Length: 83
Image 1 (tube, rainbow, N blue to C red):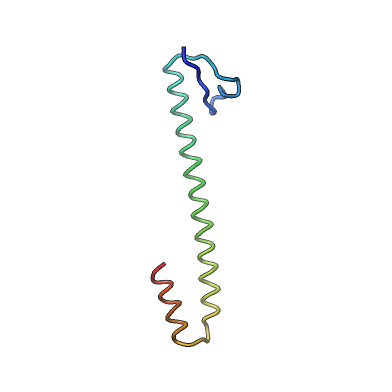
Image 2: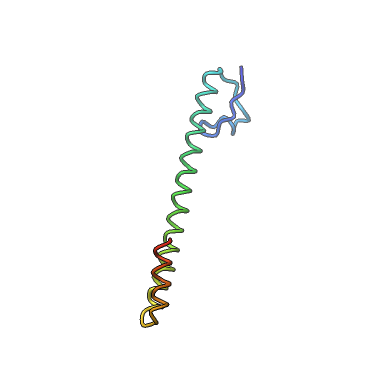
């Protein structure tokens, strides 16, 4: 019998558990799905953080450009356009 070292069902915490091959494959699949979900959530959080940083930068640029020359406003427009 193969040894299962999955994290989801706690086999790894027990130092590996001897299980039938089908069960080991099922546990491995559940582990893979859980890793995928954690990675997806982490990437969504990273994107949200980046969007907030861009929005903050853009807001500060908008406030800074107010009252400046046409050239400065044009640079801001091009920055937004090519974001």
